[in-house]
Image (cartoon, rainbow over all chains, first blue to last red; front, side):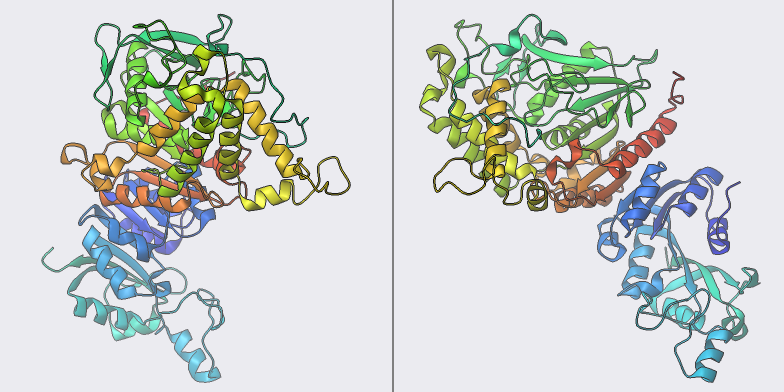
Length: 203
Length: 409
């Protein structure tokens, strides 16, 4: 079977077979390709980079070139079973609005976020007094596209404020292993990233 | 639409032999069929026409269950000679970059159909043909046709060929308008649609450019109120100017600059006169002069008008998305749109508006903007990234349609 990144694999596990999926920021289409072959999903994608879109469409995936923040609003409510956002919430200008739109156009949303509360990040900031640069977040402060970092706890608090239920949680450690299946203060320290299956309350 | 920039440059005023019926020469290649013979076809204008002729060409082989047909829609001044030597100009087919054996639109795998549009001048019934009622050329008594009418005629042709559902409809510019029209008018008869460098409506700016072209033709004293065929004249100067103006819109500033800059034509210094001092002038004059050899002036009026009238949203009650929601259900057609970054005639924003409308009904759509400085004409040129996209999209669709892999050659 096709091989994909660990966090993408965790996302894929949350997706029911034969469902309709929108992958926001689908990159080169690895997840969409995997989902369409392994789970027979009807997959669509939005990608900002021309190169990514071209690769996707050239591989037979249905992907449009566009900006999620501008283009998500066009879709009707519950147009998809899942709307996926992998590792890009922190790069959005209005992450809260994006989450809102994802939970509107999808019956479920799946979001993966890097954890700014990860112990190495905390330690770097504390010991060096400089903005943390890690393997997964390898940008200097002045060049990073990641403008809205959060800790896993921050993320959970936001979902509560927005009336969004977290149906599943996977906290991943540095090696890509699932460190926890529930959010806790400890997970917020040990997890390098979190993957969440979301649903709007009452939905 | 482009021609070699450094080809010999005839002057506009050189008279060329009047050749009104070039397209009806019996030696013209291609196929012809009379359609709507038993039951006339109703045009958008309300007028009915019956027994009109459509000239078309096919390439490749239709498979047993007739599921591998691709209909190509040509642009304003295009024709059905997609991948063969043009019978009038002797130039290669207009889409040989994209269509052919082993090309993205693979003639070894798909059955390709392309027809000259209704109102055209290369074999399909148009204003230069004889009105059966009078025996004289229609001229301006030919009914105004729309993009919808052109596609209606194409649908009759496809039915005549015994094909229930096209695998794909593809075309650029005005061809892209026809593709959209196909998808909206006959969603159950189209599996995939590829509208390229096009728009869901002709913009005010584009209507304006067309009007300049039409006025140039009508201002030519040889146009004779459209009766030039009867009177034995030909509005060559007017038609050439129309072509020159239009040709500028097909290129980008960058492309013009790269090709010509301010270079002078066969001279060391400007001549302080109104000769074609600059290469770009000479090139445009050549384009204009070459065009009148293969195109009918009245056809140019009719086809530009058809583009001007095109407005999919207006036909769908003012909301474009409704056009893609037949009977309240999302269109089953799979779309792939492509635009070109330097195209200012059909800019990316026009394609994006269509994508937004398709998203609003959660249709299956792909969209790519190709980075190029070649302007609108890019869809006819060597753009490898564009070709990759078309290839990949068709492959994906073929898989979903259950078409077998490419035949071994």
